[in-house]
Length: 350
Image (tube, rainbow, N blue to C red; front, side, top):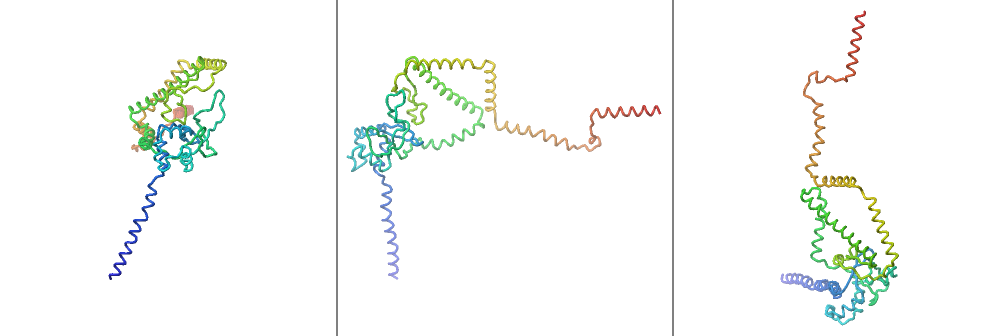
């Protein structure tokens, strides 16, 4: 009895000790993050390293230049403390290690020729492609991050709110009248603001281009698809790197603008046409605002009422012979009366 009890204890102890020791090392390895991954996330979140957004193979990527990374590492040596034993490495070795770990990818500009009217290539190209040589280059190297950036709290909240916004847009017809008015005027005001901003921006550019020969675009990134929100609302224009336009081109653009304005004025609608179109638009807006489920249901009931009345007239409660007498047209009755008169005259003659 004692031997069997001791054997059972031994059998029970072995899996407990083995189960306690074996999973410790994999869990520690899985929980511990690569130091270069931490370094890459730290550098990407740092605003001191200048970076931009571009399109690479139909995907938006965030990238930086090799010379900016070298200056950043040189001015902020404390950030290399994350690397531990590799904190003394140079910028070139760090970037090459990030390339080997697929945390970075070297890119190249798509347009490699200077466009007509410009003196040099753009410092920050908007379209990139993968470079054939995946190695660090300080002068002409562009490097894009390959990992997903950590989401902020606001991004997480917005990701849950977008389905609610879509549902609210779909339920617009059943809103109360006051809510419809608020939504309508808010959207109309936002659209009017954007159109006015674009027209004013183009007018200032055209005036300065024709008169002074300067290319000045206020809100220069408002039409760009690869910019962030901070760059989108930038007001002050960029420095003009192109050659000044010739007076012939300025005169051509001025003549074309005047002809375009005269053409629009010639084909502008008259007051009566404008009033008809305005009344039509107002009727459409009123139909949308005044529609409600109650009106829709009442309209359906009104359509069903004539059908009910027709069925009631077919099934009358009067069973007298007069209720079953058929009504004939007037011409038939007149013909019958004339025939009776003729028959009476013939009898009198006989």
